[in-house]
Amino acid sequence: MSPADTAAAALPIVAVVGATATGKSALGLALAERLPGGGEIVNADALQVYRGFDVGTAKPDAAERRRVPHHLIDVLDPHERWSAGEFARQARQAIAAIQARGRRPIVVGGSGLYLRALLAGISPIPAADPRVREHLRRRAADEGLGALAAELARLDPETAARLAPGDRQRVLRALEVALVSGRPLSAWIAKQPFGTQSIAAIRVGLTLPRSILYDRIAGRVARMVESGWMEEVRGLIGRGLDPGLPAFQAIGYRQLVHHARGEWPLARAVEETIRATRRFAKRQETWFRKEPDVTWFSAEDLDRRIPQVLEHVERALGEGRG
Image 1: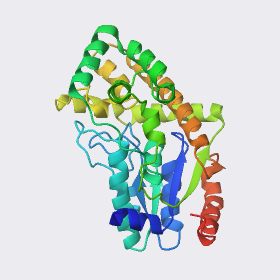
Image 2: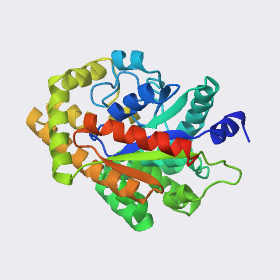
Image 3: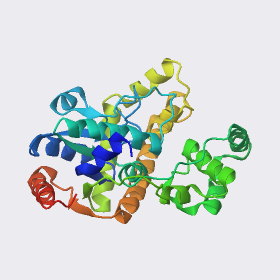
C-alpha cells in the first residue's frame, strides 16, 4: 500500500455531495472554517481542474481560496485529459498531505464516479486503443453521435444512463472500453481492485425538491452569463483553443460555442444549457441516492442549516463513524 493510501485510510475525511446548484461549495467552506483544527478542501468537480474555465464551472474565487486552501483546482491545461483514476491518485496524495498538517480533508463535488474512485477504488480501466478510437471518431462524423449513444445504450445501459447524450468524449470512451475489453465500462467501475484501501468518510449530501432545484439552476445559469461566461468562451476560442478539447465538453461551454460561432442565438444557447444542466442534476441525484452512508440535509435556507450539519459531522467524528 502506498504512503498516500495508508495515511488516507487512517483518518476519516468529510465528503460533501449532491446535485449541482445545491450549495456544496458554501457548505464545504463553512465546515472547513468551523470544524475543530480547521479543514482544507479537495475539489471533486471534473471541470474545475481546467485553467481558464472559471465562470461556467462555478470555480471558487480568489477570496474563497484565501479563506480556505483548495486542492485540485487549475491543475490542467484545456487539452489535457482527466480521469477518475488520476483524480483518485492525486486526491489521495492531497488528503495525506492535509492530514499530515493536522487538518481535516473535506472533499467537495458532484462527480459521483470520481468520488467512488477515491473512496472505494475502481479497477484500472483498459488503456485507449488509437485504432478503435479513430474508427469511432469517423463513425461519429459519418453517422452522428446519436447513433453511437444508442449503441452504447445497448452495450452498457448503466453508463449510457449517466452520460449526457451530447458528451462526445465520454460516449466514445465508454464505447471504446466495451469494444476493446469485451466488458462494459460500468463493470470495470463496479469492480474494486485488489489491494485498494477504502477511505473512511463521513458523507453528507444536500438535496432540494426538484422544482426548486430547477429554478435555482435557471437562475444560476443566468447569473453566470451576466458575470461574463460568454466573454470567457470567446476569450478561450480567441486563444486558439479547439472547441473539441476535453474541457469544452462541460455543460454550457459546448452550448455557448454554438453562439460564439454564430450558429445559435444567445437565448437558445442559454436555454439549452439550462435544459442540459437539469438533466445532469437528475442523473447526479440518482447516482448519489445509490451511494452508501450518505446523510441528507435540505439545501433550503442553507445558512440556517449549517450548524445542524456541523453538529452531525462533529458527532460522527466523535463516534468514530468515518
